[in-house]
Image 1 (tube, one colour):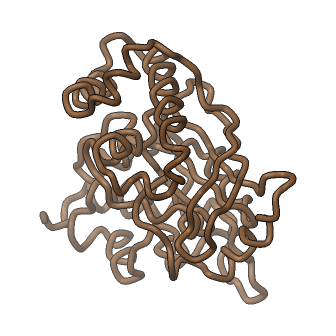
Image 2 (image 1 turned 180 degrees about the vertical axis):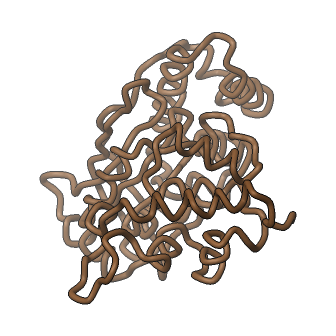
Length: 289
């Protein structure tokens, strides 16, 4: 990694500090505390929100240390609730290319992050229209597994659904056919909203057509429907079968959606969903949804 001794990296540290100082703890779901001496976030709080060590973040604000990765920049942008322009500027200061929209490092709208922060009692996460998970709250990790760290085509759950058998373990086998059809119809709706020259979606579809006969057959049916509200049955390794309502809030351009899960009315699964807060992430499935 390149060192961070240039004027640009000094500016990066100053920019991080300025963004940190404007955020109140309540804005990101943190308690204010009785002995706080700064109006904004502390350095250790930003490090916690971004999944970085305190020492590493301190080095960044000093304009020292190693060049941050694209993943770290994305995490810092989310922790600091940066706008899209501010996020792009942060990549510029870190001498990193701005990633294309739709991948794991995509910018998450601050309003969606704010809602996610406030959903503390129910599993929730933000995904792209190609089903790439961008950020999860702790209960979503406990219910669905940690989906961080996935890159390339595997970052999309739809791609994993049709290419990796283990991705289907979250759903009862009896529901697989219906889920497959719903995923393909949702994907076709997403592609229709994108520019016809979009390479990300086109590459994903071409890959699935080449590798999954099931996907190819469903794609040929031309079904199209966004997944707005779903009733799902989920297999949890500790809690067993959980039936939930999956609700969606779409961004204005349709590229991102906030998902949150509530117990299905008329079932006895609410108590099991409540146990997620107790179990935490000690016993969860792998990166699936």
